[in-house]
Length: 217
Image 1 (cartoon, rainbow, N blue to C red):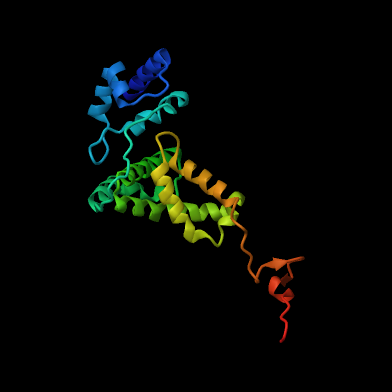
Image 2 (image 1 turned 60 degrees about the vertical axis):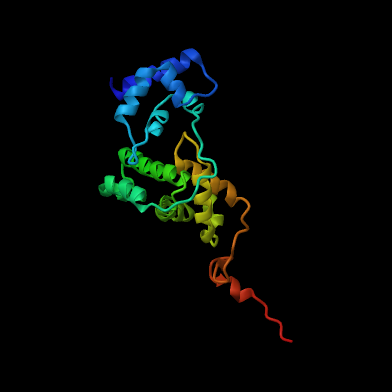
């Protein structure tokens, strides 16, 4: 069996049975050959079954129904070796964190990010902070380039907490960066814009500070 065939079989089973939700146990019960194929061939760096690669390849209508065990109140721990396993595996592709050049680069970027997200959700503080470190390069670029992010200017020190919150809340379909972008976009609407006295106004020949009136007492 090849991966494309496994996905086709799973899509077909989901289409026939139409479960409102499904999980790894559903896959095991209804398409055992698909379950064994994924279990034997697709593992994460910490030797867990890589269901993310499966759900992201399904028809979107079915992918949205995926659910699995949630790590409730995960005990925080520090294990840099887990993070290093991911970074070592993709050491030649780390540039994709902030400069993906092709669709393949974007897929690898997403794969690395999801790996760190899952570790962070299980409580690995090292994975959370590693992800914050890399993703901050991306959010800084968003704030500079996207008008809907402009109100984050001056509030950049709040962005890492937003990234951590997204790590905790992210589920199992769609791009993590897409989820983070929308979160920051919606949050930006409540940010009062910050202005500088050095900003150019009117015809661009004067700054705000030139119109500041100082009263003497």
